[in-house]
Length: 188
Image (tube, rainbow, N blue to C red; front, side, top):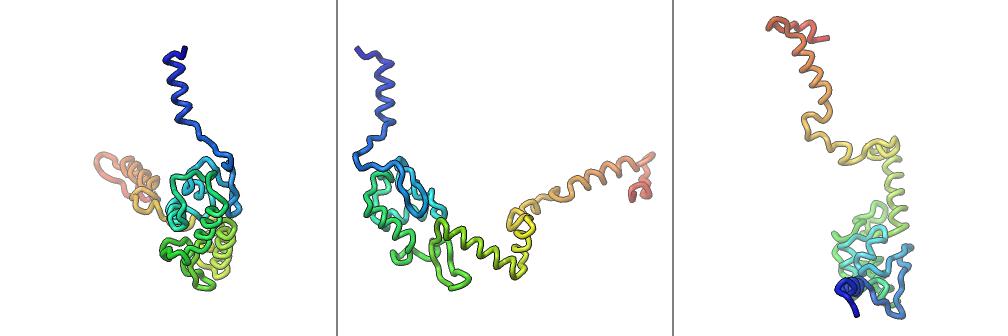
């Protein structure tokens, strides 16, 4: 006889299990990246560097792959079609503003850059910025803050002068003797 406790554990394991078919792949190699077969296709694709959730979902729709499918359930043809859509999105009428590399500096083309190509393009861009001695290039060269992180505290009135302001306030309060401020002490 099955008790109430046994039924609840049996029910919970039934919901949690993933029934793997014979051709289910637990790890799929796509664009030099291992994808988890248990994850749904768009979310599995986000493991590839340069592919986010939006471009992954769009690629699934353009390749006519069901987005509720698990990545391990995909056939070889579906995987090839997805890779083709991701590597050549303009051929599938993906808008230019959706891509992560618009108007490349060298050849003025737009493309979706992924995995190793993304690293090499970033390295080339930083080398170019260093070579022309741009402000961003110099900051990268010396390891300083670059972009918004270098300026993010400017909105706060206490961001850069907080300690000095408190010192002035404390100094001013200590320079008041008998209700009269001694300005010679305040300047020190």
